[in-house]
Length: 104
Image 1 (cartoon, helix red, strand yellow):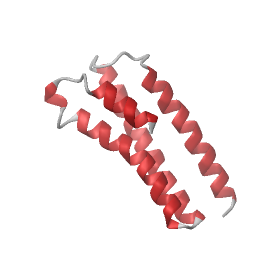
Image 2: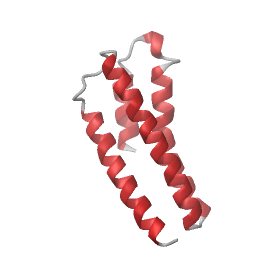
Image 3: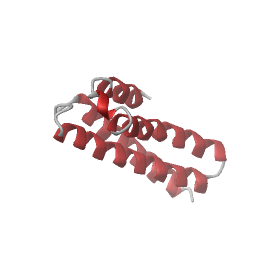
Image 4: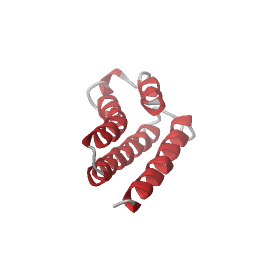
């Protein structure tokens, strides 16, 4: 959830013309990550949990790409702390995916 907050904070400073473009896409991708983790847990089976973890990982990758674009457009610096948060969440998701997959 900290990543969601970070994305909202960083995108708040984007140009107004990005409100319905990059800003909106980044926020949706960020929200999708914890939402899919929660949905996977609620489904009750390891197989479905892994499926929703894969969706969350896809959303994380999408967000990472969008942040790269924001950096390329000079909306954020390429060493912004949000990039480290992306890496941290990616490692956590990969570890969780590996652990749950082993139980299948």
